[in-house]
Length: 517
Image (cartoon, rainbow, N blue to C red):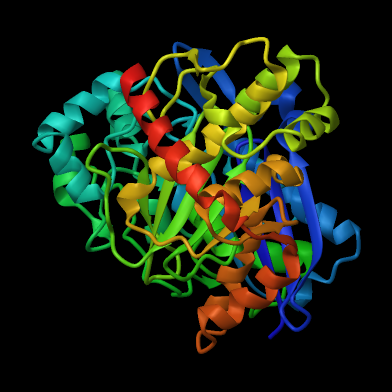
């Protein structure tokens, strides 16, 4: 038992969360917003640099500087960092950091009288890092897919379709367009392993949960695939650190952090994982059948699975869970709050009146349906367009209910490939504050729905990974249950009287969706 720090290097901010495992409480959370602190220096907007034509990058040196600012914030607020037993972290998934021959010495010889930024600015073979928002690599995806023997072969090997934002296509593009810089790259890190390397002062292995988001890992073996490496770029295997074993210790924290911020000499650093796998742990989804739903700008459905099942259509992603046992399935629906807000705004509603209107409608909406593709959708893969069935565009109440029922049914239909009997649904994100929305999801899934107060599940998951790595004899259930239960603010049960209505509506919706493709 003790105190653990979870770090989250996300798209727009660097966050730290300290937990007390004796009381199962979050005792501190601080964040450094990139735009607020670095917009003038790096030119970022929403944490990234949009170069146009689908190319979206960020700056690893900015993340380095943000780490210093974050730990300074903890220190200046008199948090006792010497009490931290272990640290783990989360990094925005798929991003890649390109290091040169200067990196090992610079990481090992950090001095507390200088900043991290001053000492690490010369370690990059490439100043920027492509991030998950980058969609500029479609040609490289096709090339990798062909080299792997086709789409199905790629999915069977890595668990995922070859996606534009995944690391492999980004690495291949770098090799093709900047060959000289590629050959000067001595190692390629993921965002997660890069941040962990700074804390221990050496380049470290990659966690399997994050490694499975690269299109380079054999999902069955949880090791890099030489076949995928060769399909991506020359001599890639010598540039990638190995996959770490679950729960292994990377080492003690570097003296820089001991002398500058007061960490204890025996504070351990555990492997960092990706933000999505960390969120799985943060919501306590460590048993197959447990499902999470993040209602944000896009809606993200993720589930714990015992076996590495894959979607033959390439719908969704499959990652290894950081628990070292299970797997994580994830589906991202672009039309999340974007669609909800579009309906709200088109009728001049506030969120309060949106909820009131929704509450006056009845389950099933009298068969009125909407396909709410206000922006191009990923799942199903369709262009923008809003389609209605038995629903007039000026029917305010009908459209309000139709958009929510559509979102719940879409996630239900397109997650069937997972073969899960959903026992519990854990929901977080901005959309989770609306009881009416949550009741619809509970009714359509036919299971209890638990609303979590935690918004940064990735940072919490990272802190819990540190706890598990430090206290290896404790079971995952013993670790996550106290935090999961303490953070649940409401449980909503399905209305069994709606079961037949929604069984019929789901079938109608699936047919409507299929006929509109």
